[in-house]
Image (cartoon, rainbow, N blue to C red; front, side):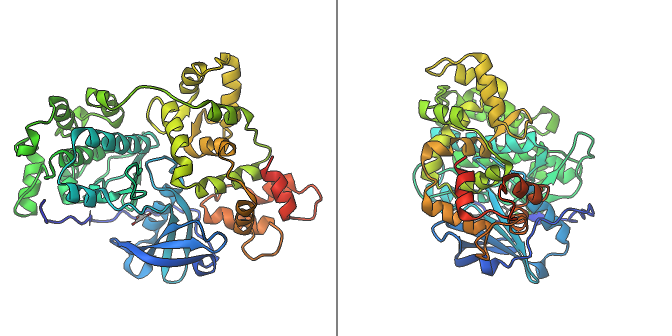
Length: 468
Ligand code: PIT
């Protein structure tokens, strides 16, 4: 593989003068986390393993960004704002963020399995079936982003990480430093950003939209199957001219045994004109995936039973369950994630009512549509007509029997980090802010559950709230 400019390139970073609510916290990260070995270094910062002091068993990744190296803090705040809104099995999960005099710190899910890039270098290239499994994960993540109006703008194998070293590790999209939100009325983007090998022709021309991501996905798919870049050049000018012409070939020996369907999908992603390019949603229905997708929808009776039993008793309980969801390790999540993916029949990272009816109606007990609808609205507590990934995980937590005494205590300490013995509106507000939940009314949350009106929640009260 070539060694030319694998680094993200940023020209004219956009200045976002929107007054964003601060997501970061005034508590110091050092008082909350211990940190360990370095996992990697990126454009602006360093990523380390860390452990919350409230729960040393839960390993996290902490990215620390040196403010001295950042010209425009708003860009960083936009990155955090975008991360806060992401909730998908194939996208890194943000836990908290902190800011001090020198650094921004982003606390995230830990990925210990390394980059897709390293794995590709090791293997040389992937077998078609393995490449298809990875491509489904990549496309699901991108489809989700596009459905919530986010363009990543720097998709490349270095920005996909495996969450563990196991053979069944999950793939997670990282690095939202160049991501942009766009609305239906938004103008096209103009800054030339991204990484040269993966950059779409319309980005080089200076006027583009979210379909630039699909070009990069096409480049990634090409590389997974043959180990080489589709577009190369002795320098940037030559590389860019190849990209602008869209000239690439299925030439190397590795392409000999590759199916015509795989090549067809690549051609559709590497269409020069963005309007002719296949979308993530369409790509997920491409016949190439026919042989990997079992199309077998399976949600175990245990999971359905816990969905049925689930009843949220307060908004406070909802926030605590969100904390427990973040603590789930990848073994605990595996079957729940598969169930979620089965229910997400449109592969966009949400379960809609129609998805839900289709799957649950076929479950062993064949419940009536009316019952399924009631079940759906019970689970969709923000009533936006779709159950997102963490809402689903929260509702199925019970089936995992994970909330034991020790976990309850670490959760309690998370919301009462100063060990006062009581979670107050102030300590709750601080925890919610760290998690980026700036619009949640902590006073109201406490009022709702503070039956003895002493201004807070002690451990025994906390236990009762969590157990519903
Ligand atoms: C890990 C392990 C690792 C790197 C990362 C996470 C980085 C994640 C990341 C970086 C970003 C961003 C979102 C996620 O916006 O080696 O668990 O700049």
